[in-house]
Length: 252
Image (cartoon, rainbow, N blue to C red; front, side, top):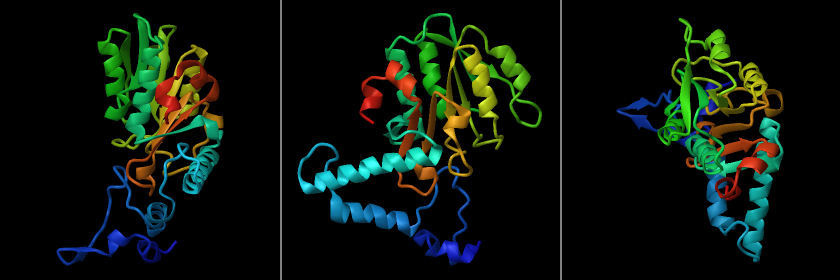
């Protein structure tokens, strides 16, 4: 790997601030965009701008074809079917889409529990707090060990027959712990609970295979992995979204 050569792919890194080259260390928040992505976005606006799936003219057909191809590319990237991939603005909207879909389908009932960890990003906390405030479920938090990894013994104790959903980060954006989501998902499914993986910090950095992890839902953001701002992905396992989702996912 040649870092000097790689820097040339990023126009922003050609800038200087106060006479010094930029060293960018904030990719966990949002990544810089390489020239290949910038050119692709520019090419769409200069050559193929049209409504997707809402026109019968040539430009609309071309835009729709590229849109559908992108679902296949993203699906293969995480080992999913293209019809299991939904586009959102970011991971936060993906999680909110799941929450809204489950809530409006009366999935949660009084006395149910949602299990989270104490390392969750607000994006995977606030939506479930909303459910709790509606009186639909109680939030239960799994403790961390002294080294900031998830306490799996506490997880096993916290998940019960009352658990309807387990929502966990794959990788923490603060303490950098990587959770064994495959094992967590198995425990959740043993209790017939749905399992959501917040993969915003994992998909950009290592291989994520939904067929191995077997989540019901998984989210990530394109803008954290060199993609344009305002792009996110929600994976919904086919059997689950057919049962629980309506307009909020169908529109994605």
